[in-house]
Every structure is written in structure tokens, then in C-alpha cells.
Length: 276
Image 1: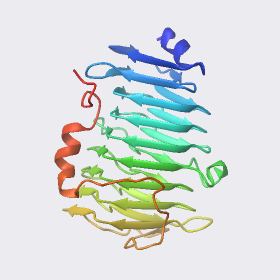
Image 2 (image 1 turned 180 degrees about the horizontal axis):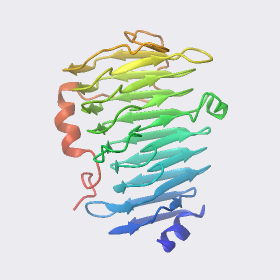
Image 3 (image 1 turned 60 degrees about the vertical axis):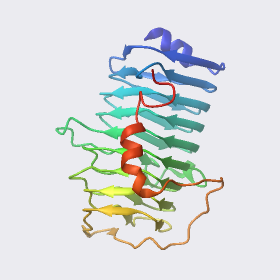
């Protein structure tokens, strides 16, 4: 574990191939700039601790299993140009993957998120923007989530977005007993397209607090046995017809009816092209 911390923590360009299980013992591993952390085989296991990217740029995290961190599983604070791909993140004490303090230009793809420990009341998967006062995120938090599996045990924040311009497409949601899936908050724009929502409550919703009201555009999504319930207060249910940003990259979504099979068979560690 100490060797991993030493090699990952510098800004020197490195590709680190991780094998086996790393007992982090409630410690975090700082990941510096210009790093690729690649799990071998069915995925390297990081147990009991977090990966922390603070002001790091040009980072790839791939084929990793993170479990039982007492804090976030993966924490991005002021990070930029990060790709998180084919990772499995489960049962963390705080968020599974949180993006705050001016993080920008992030893709999260083909990952599996969930909770098996249902005694954990803080099953809040992915938060963008630490609070309404996280002004470093203004004009940043440009994030794409695609082909991720939001699995059983997730209560909310799949994701919850302040400030960001977030494209959520071709994801699979099946988290019975959840509160909501995607939430747009102040200054946020969420583009929600061609996802599959099954056995969930409130596929998307709007929370109004301070500042400019968030926006939602939703199109091409499939709903199976979903429930829409307005809890009142500062939460609103919206149809998803707002004008939002256009993706700044070429993209071609998969048909949403393919998503349950594609994602459950290919998302998470050990299921990428690198798996043996």
C-alpha cells in the first residue's frame, strides 16, 4: 500500500498496473497528474479506503474495484481531464464518486455503483458540487456519464448536480426503494437521454434553493415500473423540456432497449476489453 501511495502521488507520468487486493485501512491514496491506474484481470481491489484526485489532471482510472471506504470511494476535487472507466464502487461511507471544487472535463463510463450494506443510511452515489457555496464549480463540472449501472441500494444522487453541464446517456437504473435518480440544482443543466429506468422513483427532478434554477432536458428514455412522486418542499417534478447545452463532441447513443443487456453484461470491473 505504501508503494502504491508513493508511485501514484507524484505528477510524473506513469502507468501503474495493479494486481490483487490492496488493504488501505481507512487511508486514501492521492493520485497525482499524468497517471493511469489499471487493474489487471478481473480488477484490482482497493479495500477500505479512497482514491483522492486533488488538482490532478490527465488521469485514467480503469478496471478497479473500490469497496468499504469510510469516505468517498473516488473523490475529485479541482481535478481536470479524468476518465473513470469499467470500475466497480460499492458500500462507501460517503459518496461513491463525488466531483467538487472546480472539477472539470470528466467522463464516467461503464462503471457499476451500488450498496450491499443497507444499514448505511448515507447511500448517496454521486454528488457534483460540494454545496451551494462551491463557486469554484461555476462554468466547470462538464461531465459525461454513459453506460453506467446504478444498482440496488443507491438511494439518490445518480447524479445530483450543482453548477455543471452534465450529459447522462445510455445508463441503466434499477435501484428499488430509491428516493430519486437524477437531480438538477442551482445553475445546473442536465441532458438526460436514452437511459433505461426500471423499478425506481423519480427518474429526474429539480431542486430549487438559491441562485439560478437548474434545467433538465430529457428525451428517448425508457421507463419500466417507475413512480413519480413529489415530496414537496423545494423539490419539483418537471417534464424535461428545458433548453440546455449541446454536447461538444460527436456521439451516437445505443438504442435504449439494448441498455439492460449491454450494461449488466459489460459494466464494472473485470468486464472490459482488458479482462482475462
